[in-house]
Image (cartoon, rainbow, N blue to C red; front, side, top):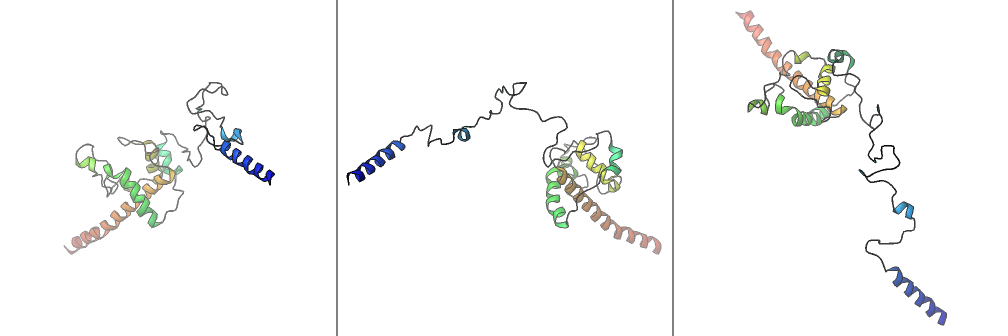
Length: 201
């Protein structure tokens, strides 16, 4: 009986002691090497590397996971016409959904929602009108050169390599192509009607 009270008393004392904590050090560290990281904070000095810095640049030629390494230089615009092709197959829903959204967010402010070069910045005379996608020469521009333009920019248009990833660039170009196809389809009946009226005369 006495031993039982001794055990209960001992457990009570241990319980009280175990509840005593430093507010800055809650809990017991059973595995200090896992609880206290030996990693260096970003921007802190680091004696492990030769330059003494924790933040290191990626090795030359390295490519991030999921990143696309574009094979052509800025000066190889003409080569892009045949060297670069769309590797993706998008559904109509993807083009009219995500593709349209990306176009409106990134391109329409200059190129216009219809791709006619009459975007908001053009309307308020803050930017000269870019060429319309719906007429030549952009109507028949090779897709590789369009992609090259997104990568490096052309004339007054800057690069969109950082704003859009590889897949998103092709989604935007696919949506632009859908605008062009719709414009061509609309122009055919008008052309046919004009031809018929000419024949009638």
